[in-house]
Length: 551
Image (cartoon, rainbow, N blue to C red; front, side, top):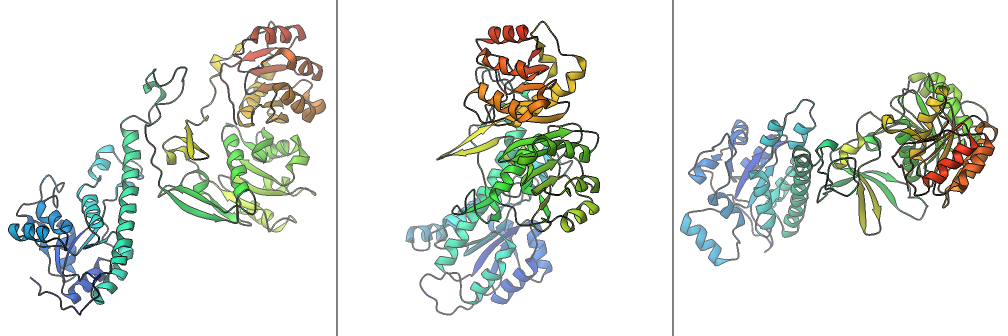
C-alpha cells in the first residue's frame, strides 16, 4: 500500500486527495492520470480492465474485490455494488455518526471517484449492432458511483471525462479540490448521467415497441387515430447547441440551432460547402424545401419563400426540374431557398446563372465539383449563396420519431406527415373520371399541397407547380389566389386541396379557369353539394380520404 500523501495546510473547503476509486470504460488519458496519482502517492482502488491498464503504467492498484471481499460476478455485471464501496463514497466527513459506522465496519473513505460510462451510444449507432449488445452496455455500477460521489460533493470529487484529468491533477498538486471545484464537477456529473439515461430511455422505448410499426399500435390510442404507434408518456430531450446564429427571425432576437446530443440527422448533420453563415430563416426555409423534395420519387426541385413552396417540379433530370420549378413564380423565386433530391450537378448550376436570378441557399444530398465552382465564382451573388449538403437518413429518428413544435411554455408532438399516400384508397366520386394522362399531375398536385400552409390549394400542370394559394382563412380565397398565380396555365391543369371544400362556392371559379380535375380529401358534411357542383361543371373529382393540414 502506498504511504499517505504529504499535504500542506489547506483552506477549510479543500479536501485532500488520499484515496480514489478509478473505473473507466474510456481509457484515453489514463497514462497521465496514473502518473499524477503515482507522483502524489494517492491510494488507488480500481476494477478489472482499468486496474490492469493502471498497473501497466506503473501504478500500484488495489483491486476492488480486495475491498469488498467479493469477486466480480455475472460476467462483470456486479463489481462495485457493495457497501464497502458506496459507504466510502457517501459518508459525510462532518458527521461523527457516519464516521463511527465506517470505523465499525472497517470501511475507508474515498476522496474522489474517477468514472466514465460504457459506450452505449456508440454501440446503438453502429450498423449491425444487436439489442443484446446494447443491453450489455447499459451501465449500472458506473452511473451509481457517479451519482453517489456527485451527491456527496461536499466531501468527494467526481471526475467523469478524460478532459477533466488535467484540472483534477492540478488541484491534487495544490493540496486537494475546493468546494467550488467539486460543485462544478458534480453538476457536470449529473448532466453526464442525465444524458446517458436519456439515450438509454430513447433506445429502450423503441426496443419495447413504443416506436414501432403502425400495425402494432393499439386501436384505443385515440379515436380515429390511424397512423403510427402510441405516443410515449414522457419525452426526455437532451439538446446541445450546434450552431450559433446571427439572430432569429428578426435582428433583436438571439438564436441558435440545438439538436439532440450525440445525434446527427437532417439539417443538424448538414455540411455547408460555401457561402455566408446560415440564418434562422434560412434553416426554416431549407427544412420546408427538403420536406417536399424528399417526398418526390423522381428527380425533383423545390423553390421556397417564407416556408412555402412557390415552385416545385419533377423531371428526368435535376436541371429540368429546377427550370420548371423556377418558372412557376419567377418573381417569388428571387431571393428564395432551393432544395433538390439528387446530386446538384453543373447542368443544374447553369440554370441558376440566368441574369436577374438570386438564391439564398441550395440544399442537396451532394454537389459536384463543377457545380460548386460555377456557383461560387460565376454569379454576382457568389459570395453569399449557401451550398448545404444534407446527408440521407431519417431525420425523425433523432427525436424518437416525433415532430416537435414549441408553443409558449410547452411542446407539441406528433408523428410527422411523411408517409406516401395510398392511392388504392382514392375514389372518383363524379360521373366523369380523369383521363389517364392526368394521373401524373394528380399524384404530384396532392404531394405538393401537403407542404403548403393551410388553407392550401395548388394547381399543377404535369409534374410542375404553376399556382399556389396558401395560408388563407377561407378556402375559396385560397382557390382564387392559386388560380390567379396560375393564370392561363390553369386551363387543363389539376387542382389539389389539402382539406375538404366546406362549400360548393369554390367550384365556380375552378370551372371558369378550365381546371381539368380536382383532387381533395373529402369529409365535409356538404360533400354531396360539392360533388354535384363538380358534376354540373363536368370536372372530374377524386376524394383521397386523407387530410394534410399544415399550420
